Length: 177
Image (cartoon, rainbow, N blue to C red; front, top):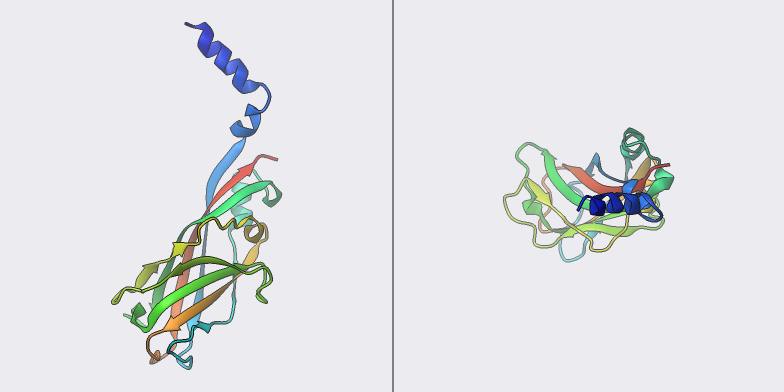
């Protein structure tokens, strides 16, 4: 009976299992705000807001986990929350739907859908977007920054500029250098 655990230990130390043992899993959390200007139109056509650059915590998080960007193997969005922060008491009643895209730069190079939400609930000051299925985000979190572009379908004209905070949590798998 003692032979089985010892044999299993030897097998785990040999060959291909070393890669599994050295794979790290951790989260990268980023926060950035953008403004929905009062001047933007509403109706049946979504409005694309200018891209905002996010100075990511990825480089620091990688270092804290003893790895580097080039060793990242898999990045996926776990959570993305939008919170109306200004004016006080602002809800998402002005929004019908929202899509958030990620790219490596503000010009939208290699832009992909990161998360979205149709039928935004009334009265909410904070909403959770649905991560785009099967979207790998490795490329976007290999640098110290990335850009977010919002496509918003407004249900009404905002009476004043609305500031929205984006809180994102990415799940990262990386190997040791």
